[in-house]
Length: 336
Image (cartoon, rainbow, N blue to C red; front, side):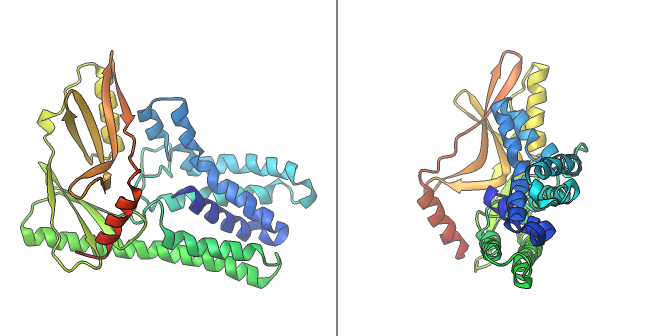
């Protein structure tokens, strides 16, 4: 999830663990704990795009990291907060839960989280977009409200727990909505007589009313969307895989790097040649409109074979027309 949401969740978690003893400092250190796992994005400043992408939501989002980092952070904060006289263990417990709830929340998103690192297993429920105001804003309101209440008051605990309960119930609701949407896509495919091997669904940006769907139809992908306000049948756009036309990189390292990209996309990818340059599209994150008649895939990588290896560079996203994008999103949410 986005940084603000993780800060809010971490603050609420810190309040549960130590709020009665240290007040708003528990929220502060909880918020810090909720931020730490996403510092793995700094890896991109020191390595190539493929390696940085593989590292994201890896070690720093694992149970192993939570167990190892919590005591160290607890010891450090205990040195800083000597006046609290708590010892390192309560602080370590706060950091453990602040660190652990971060990847638990990320599991509900699309990217994939290696909670059980070093095992190569990425969990992704694909039920919530990385920024969802319906999850974050009520939760944030509860946390801010609790900040201004007496640390020992029952009302403070109730308000903080209200935010946690709301956010947890909303996450469960997204799973229910996803199940309903999956059934809608299955029915649409059955009605049209399409043969397929797999369906992947996820909510569109900022909401859980409009959903995107990718269908693996063996030699092609069928891509569509569905809003709970739709009145017309689901229609699919066909994208041929054209696997036989993909570039055949001769150096072994170049082949390895292409396979790494494919693994990152979990097999949901397309490749396209524009002039003399190949582009790799990760289909899991849907598309954004760039004009009334054209949409681009959100995650695209430009491929460049240099010497013996293959270099992937993530293409810049054009958000200059953000008003247009939001307008199109709102129109589609309202139904077809």
